[in-house]
Image (cartoon, rainbow, N blue to C red; front, top):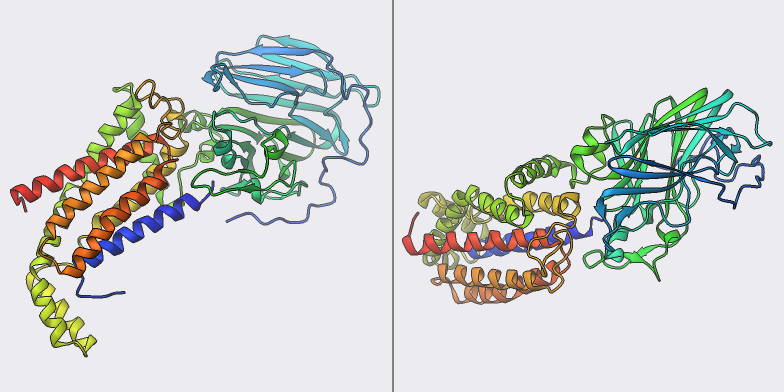
Length: 530
């Protein structure tokens, strides 16, 4: 996940906090990626030296289809590889079911020792509605190599077992990547990458941090896979592993500012974004794996019992608990309110009410600080050449009147991790994918407002709020009033520009939250409810 949007947001909040500190305290000018290692000699390369040249390389012999309640899986009789995975409960931009494997690709091949089995001819020797058993029949291979698929009717997880005639290492690989599934492919590209959980730690490698050649990485490997914004393909080993690898197909770099979208330089094609993941197991006659091919849905992934829920992005480590809590709240509300846009409005109201005491404290502190301005200016004149004494006298004045110069910043500081958590959640949760708020306007809360109306009215709301804050500090010095006037125009414009391409769900939250904050501030000023 690209961190540049977070840096931009952090800078915005930093400016807001510093500005608030200036207004309320003008007298005091205060001013783990996993490292690449050399693969052991036993690691299998993508092009093994001893790979036979099979005659079935380019011939599609036959296809076998398995239908479950959640997916349709098509398996090719070339290597017993997977030709297609069609998710029935998720729609693509053309209103068809989401297809995860790129066109004309096959995946989930493997290699026995240094012998590549991905293109070998296989024969279907047994099948049931939820299982397929293949035997490798190529004359260049030893007899007794079987591949068995076992599916579950209501699960995105299935099993594959490889039986070999003698103990050998086996390399299983998902080498087709995933296809783009969203309308805005350029924006989606920045979410493509490889992901692994090894030694209890999850590491995500984006397109720019992946090499084109696989390098074996040893460790206690819990699972490895490839992902895009909303979907995941992961391999979970059922036997002892030796190493894993993540790599991409080409050297194409991802460019562009991620605040407005990242994309490969030049036109997008599948090779530019194709990420491969593989696992190599220790020598054995039978190798078992679980495969998950489905949505990046936290609850669905957690039910697999394989720790795959850690593949869901919830932001930086210190805000993940907040993101998970918010996810529970949003999905819980959605059980009662079917429209996720309305859910976000209710959620914004609940948060604004929770922070009302802080808002009240901030407004009271701002007004009290304005009352102290004449005395602060006297101290500035008195100790103009004695900064140390000025600071001591200023702090004593604050203590005497029970005022904290930092209380006005507290609501913003507390909101920063909350905003980060909401950004991570609302930007990537599949729950908002295709969620309609208002038909013919915002028909997908996970995408930006197509008419940019929501960010613009959000900016207008921020301007009104800044203007209201200016009235609250009307007794301030001329210098402070000039600063406030500058910020009154600058901050709304800056926020509007940055929020133009943010998910509509996130912009909706910030807009509604500002409405409630404005109403609270207005009420406090009118009633002097301190």
